[in-house]
Image 1 (spheres, rainbow, N blue to C red):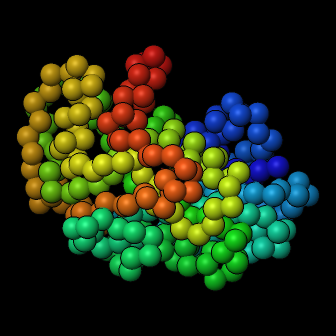
Image 2 (image 1 turned 90 degrees about the vertical axis):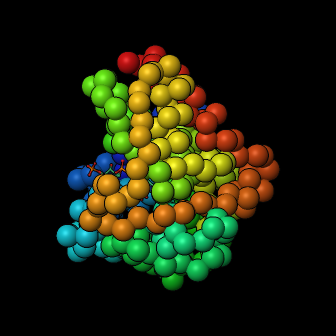
Length: 283
Ligand SMILES: NC(=O)c1ccc[n+]([C@@H]2O[C@H](COP(=O)([O-])OP(=O)(O)OC[C@H]3O[C@@H](n4cnc5c(N)ncnc54)[C@H](OP(=O)(O)O)[C@@H]3O)[C@@H](O)[C@H]2O)c1
């Protein structure tokens, strides 16, 4: 029996639909009935004797976190600590998600799991504090943290959705060309997560689609795949000042995940094609 926290978020809803498709027994939990910042809302779940808790909850408003750090911290750090203590008490395995924003984004090599962290934003700091809480509370055999990046998929605000919406306006677009990352499809991340459950995997894994690009390249690839004629101008990050600092070059190396799953991680353009095909069908 699996408990899925945050079952209606972008990743959570994908996990829920894939678990249902695999006929897995799980209990979907959503906010505010189940609020990870209020331990008393979790108590009733102990009666279900879950073997696994998957935590797809998070405070994900990266810029807003700079002006309301307490709120971000209460979910991403304190809330995760609460979940880790709960998992310890009931002897459940905890599967959690983190981010490339725990790194500075200065490495030109790409990041391995063991590389030093150096978050540049409040969001990154709170996510790192959540990671640390899990490491402090649970033995490593009892947790998995999947660090992902540039996530997109159904049921969530994301870059692909934004670009397709902007394209409908028929105007030229300006897109940032000096931030490099790994676009990752929530469908792939959910699949890796569920596949890992049947292995003895433990510890931190970088979980992103293979390859990397800038937001500008990502936008152009979306439009090419959708056969949309959109003029896109590359601009530097200065053109779109944001409250939170973002890593400039945050490529995560997913070799460890690939070994654990004993299969290659597919390239981001291939994963994007699958998402866009399903997107067109739903539209
Ligand atoms: N999106 C990205 O680009 C990205 C990149 C790197 C890493 N990640 C990580 O990937 C994971 C999934 O992200 P996502 O994009 O799927 O997030 P999301 O769509 O924002 O979903 C987050 C979920 O958490 C719920 N939630 C918020 N506060 C809660 C609380 N106190 N108690 C219980 N539930 C709460 C939200 O409920 P409400 O909607 O009702 O508030 C929502 O269902 C997160 O750990 C995130 O940090 C995401």
